[in-house]
Amino acid sequence: MQRYAMPSKRLRSLTDGKGVDYVMDCAGTEETVNQAILMCSRGGKICLAAFPHGRVGIDLGHAVMNNIYLYGIRGKEERGRAGNCTDGGKSASTQP
Image (cartoon, rainbow, N blue to C red; front, side):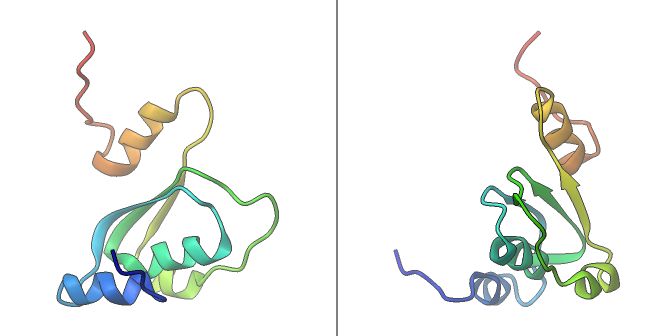
């Protein structure tokens, strides 16, 4: 599998420049959070499954101008909170 220096550019080329509706960042670094912002379509959502241990610089202007939502999911209720990020809390469960 080929690695890309700018995954957001590659993803945008695969989606005709639109980006995707949902991105889950499982690394929590400044670079991956910013890549997630650039991958999102207008009105997209980002689930931050990992978090940085200090301050990070993000492209807040791009996120705000494109109505991108960032959700932090952490703790014992991660599953339910992740569902809120992806489908407004209407996630299906296989458990009774």
